[in-house]
Image 1: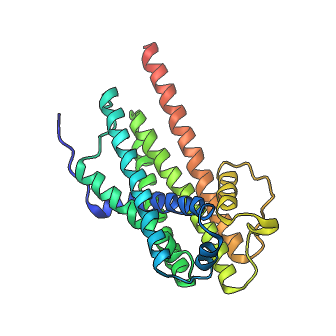
Image 2: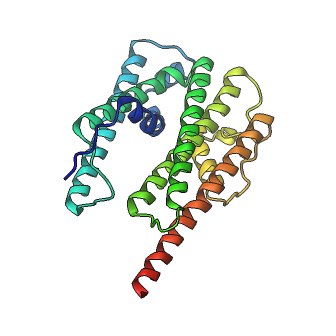
Image 3: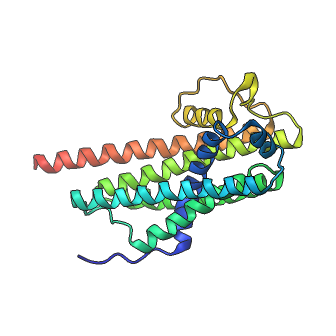
Length: 260
């Protein structure tokens, strides 16, 4: 069996940073329901102390542990099912991914509670999502070539990119809302109205938007919120339609080949 070259740290960073950061935010949200109210209030006000740094380290360790266990389990499933379309992560790649998980989880505490940190996260996430769009376009062009049949590995890669986009847009929507709150201006989506949670409502809003449901219970009211919605709709709808088309095309091609 031909050995797959080890991916570089930066390639792992591009593919893992957004999901790791997303997992870290979710874990931080869970921890906020366990920690004392005084600690949560201090975090929300950007008052960092030794306890807060410890929380960041713990959040990073939890995130890194989840990433590590995910890849270990993925490797076992690939070996058990003898999948040829997917390759297992090598130990070095798992190490890189685990480190990214720790960094993403730890940075959640340090970045998301300051305006400068929110801006930095937004820039990094936008850059990574743009890179994923380029990779998505590359895969689509390759799959649409005459005679090519999409494998489950191709479909899973498209789904990975789509889920990364979902996590990225969730973070962008939440950080945009948080930036307005930190600056004292009107929030674009109103995720925290009536005691709502900014992260869960951002996730809900993103899923509803990207799956074309659009219930309308959260509507952007500022120019940047509307711009975010336009970009999110255009990107997600095109990606969703192309994925459905690729899968349908592959099924039809397989059926035609079986008939002949």
